[in-house]
Length: 112
Length: 110
Image (cartoon, rainbow over all chains, first blue to last red; front, side):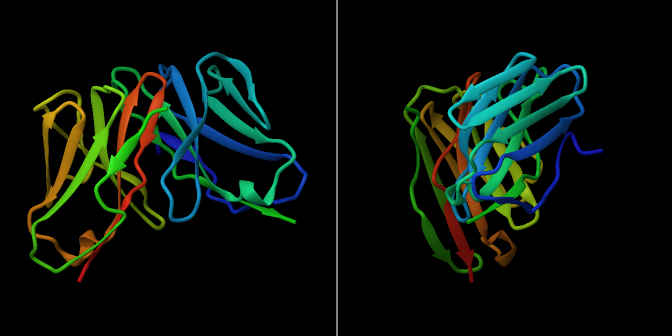
């Protein structure tokens, strides 16, 4: 079992709709969770972090965390073509220092 | 803002050459990392360092070495470049707020 799992996609979303990305993790003691956006040919960019159960909103992005279910998600509201990218989920397992474990990423395509 | 810089965006080397990839961060982070990223394989950790002169092997250290003589600088060395080391190389530094990546070096080994 992979430590951090994501559906590879592509997730095709009409412009203006909500894109919903999911991520599950195996280490129940994990405390920090991150979402990265990576455009083709570019490096990953940190867009959201979440540490407590519940929702965290930042602009059009909402991260949701459910530690009991070992599940973290990212919602992108009012999706734009510029949101087309690969989104990486990352988890900081306990005793890992600040070394993150990354999922394989979900490719999102926003169609005009 | 955190800034991580890498010495080259694009690099072309020949098989057998010794290759140096340099990375510098300006946020006084203790933790630094080198990854490679290939299509379909995701991010793979090569080496990381928690402090000056300290290094730890990641998941794919074979064929690579690292050097960290100063806190802000972490170098990746390909001792004898091979064609299967053609890849995108990403340097990162981290603190509890997250991991921050440099722009990447696309290395081609001919």
